[in-house]
Amino acid sequence: MHLHKQNRQLTDEINIKKSIKNNKLIYRSLISKVIEIIYMVMLFGILLYMITIDSFLKIEINNIRTLIIPFVTITICVFIIYWYIKNDKLQREKNILNSKNKLIIEKYLLQLTDQREWSFTNNSDCVKIMNIPMWQIQIGNYSKLYIIYDNDDLLLNFSSYGLFGLKFPVNYICNRNIEQRIIQKIKTKIKNAP
Image (cartoon, rainbow, N blue to C red):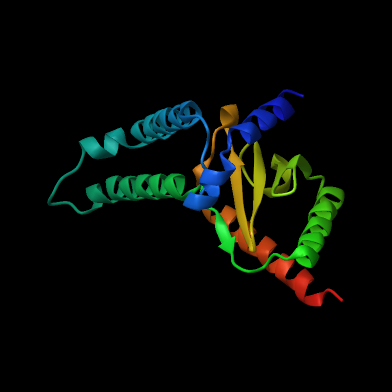
């Protein structure tokens, strides 16, 4: 029940008009985003510090082997920061929506709720948000599928959440892959519709 309440609060915090305009999920409140950033810095900063402090202290310019672990650590940090920044991006499929195609998409989303135990936290005319249990997709506490209708365009974002309901950027590549598979499945269903 607590997770459902948390999901409802998250749904209410998304500014749909700004999200469509900026092509990424925009939250009504900056507080949750600031808390998320602090959480990410603390979690990954402390973790990386604990793992690599010894390696950074033993760097010798003349010995290339002492540079490997610090270089890998910095590279991982750069990727995590990049994934975090890009995590809210909405994938836009242009000119895919019409009244017939919307019905096909609605039917497909209902199939997902039946077949995979996904559930709607928001199912309005222009916004669909689905909650996906952790054990079905990847690491994290749960994932969400955001679908926004913008005239003839379909906007989609698949995001993972970790502790305290904050975005979890480590699944970035997997999330983008899932988005592409969902879009392909929707296009296939539209193409094969009578």
